Length: 175
Image (cartoon, rainbow, N blue to C red; front, side, top):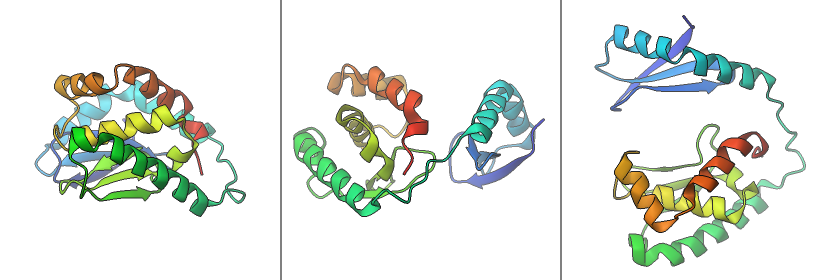
């Protein structure tokens, strides 16, 4: 069994994260400990791999990166996408933020604010578009069900290629 930090919150499912070479388990307030421990045990191989990867990860020096320029570039890209997808998702008054995340590319808040990882500045435009569409669809469908991904596919038929690129290149997208 692994040592882990347990974080309970108003969520519906269990989630594992590797943060600074440590395992974090996120769980609903009412989840029982035996359910959480079984979940961690079932994910043992994944946890071992991710812990090894995180220990081997070499952070790129970021002194040479002008974060404010990156922010402007990404904001311009997101504004263009907002205009392009306005008819599809009704994005006219939608708040769109750029933040620095360690473990996610974007998020859609319960109030409908869309947030995107500053590191997407380093990704190809089609990948940024995929993340944008992915988060916009969360305005309609709040989970990652089959219906969610069917909806993604109706808008971006090649979304799997972009998703794969993100998975394979996540280590390179560090600011």
